[in-house]
Structure formats: C-alpha cells, structure tokens
Image (cartoon, rainbow, N blue to C red; front, side):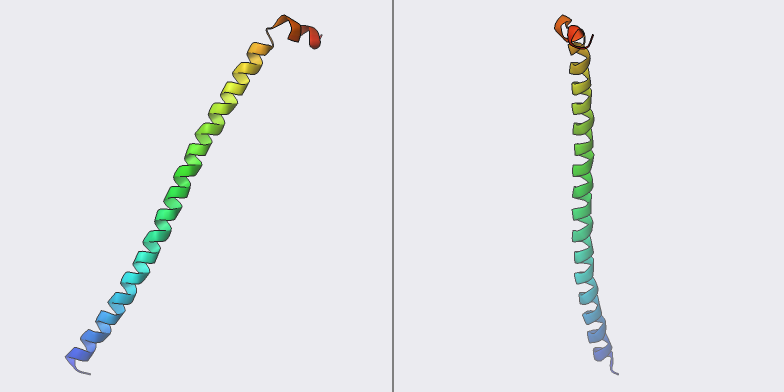
Amino acid sequence: MTEAERLAIIETKMAHYERRMDEVYGKVSEMHSVILQAKGAKYVIVGAAGIIGFIASMLTHLPFVKRLFN
C-alpha cells in the first residue's frame, strides 16, 4: 500500500467521522433546547400554582364564601 493510498483511506475515514460528529452535535443541540423548554415550563407551572393558591386563600376571606361552606 502506497503512502497516497493510505492517505486517501485516512481522508475518507475523517470525512465520515466529521459527518457523524455533525449529526451528534445536532442531536445534542436538540436535547439542550428541549431541556431549556422543560425548565421554563416548570417555572410557569410553579408560578401558576402560587397565583392560584393566593387567589384561593383570598376567596376564603370573603363573607359569602364563608357562608357557602358553613
């Protein structure tokens, strides 16, 4: 096997590895964006639960609501 043939094989392998790395990078980027979306959704759910809890606690202080549950 000549030097040129070995170099051609190595170049072919490197091109294949570069394509695979591009695919892996794309998948990692997609997973990162999904994780960031999930983190944002978590904060929205916690915030909504806090607001709903606050409103519910304020409603219990209203006279007509107290009469409903007595």
